[in-house]
Image (cartoon, rainbow, N blue to C red; front, side, top):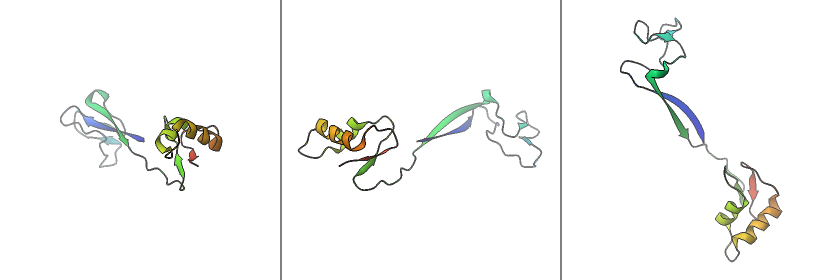
Length: 109
């Protein structure tokens, strides 16, 4: 997931991330909120972090990408073939893939 910061005004009249319309290097010219481009008055804004999903790349058939916080056990439980225990399948996945890390493409069989 990607995190993006944005600003929400706490005070009426304050414009977070204001644009410099006249190119003088200042925003909100002539107001009590006048300031250099790219600066915010911290006590007048609330910083909001927006988490946006990151599109995963397609993986080849019979594979899955190991996500953050996942391991061979979580993959084995989720993709265990019928008639096999997840414990045995986890051993199979370990033999096929060795040591795994987040973001790695895991062969399922």
